[in-house]
Image (tube, rainbow, N blue to C red):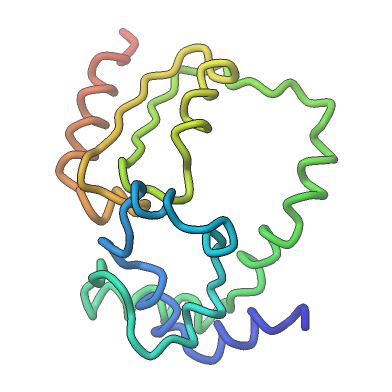
Length: 164
């Protein structure tokens, strides 16, 4: 059923953000030891669990802001971005696959989405890249370690500031 994700997410936006926006769900080290069959992500499966893993990242007020916004717009647009992944990749095959602007990448040691292998390959596509990996942090680095992320951003911007 290709519309199942839309229906489930639109039915309970508060639950979606409670399930998605969590920290300390699993470490990268532990994730890498799981059998390959268990290393996939299914939001629908996660939404069906009674017990949630990890700790919530959003306050009740923050969750309400997100849920209200998605109650108004729905999840179909963002879900379609993932549905169209392969087509987008194919349609940009002839586009130069490099980023020519100064770039700061802030990753996280326990991010199970962006892998060390992917990060290691970035300089081939982003020549002017500065990378930082936050310890004790997962995929949602801005919410998990806001002070560290802000410090890295401010420092990088100050060092990269062009005279006017």
